[in-house]
Length: 69
Image (tube, rainbow, N blue to C red; front, side, top):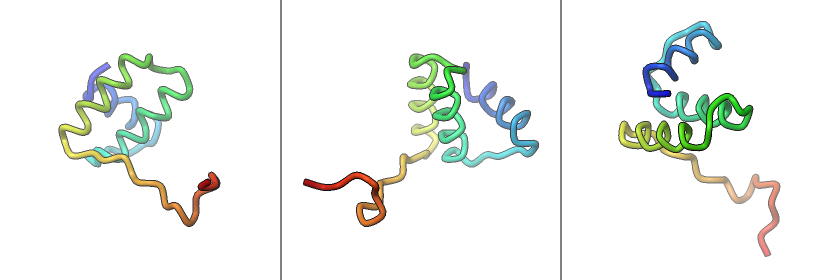
């Protein structure tokens, strides 16, 4: 799967088009978690999206459900 195919699936699923690379990254992550794409496809999509400016949001420590030890 490439970015073009990911965008197409996004449009079919969400009924709107986006060029927001962060939204596409979230969509790719969801597809991977739901076993719709392989880890290899997911990694390739993440690389391509990061090259286009996508970033993985940092976790807000204060609102995290994981305790710091």
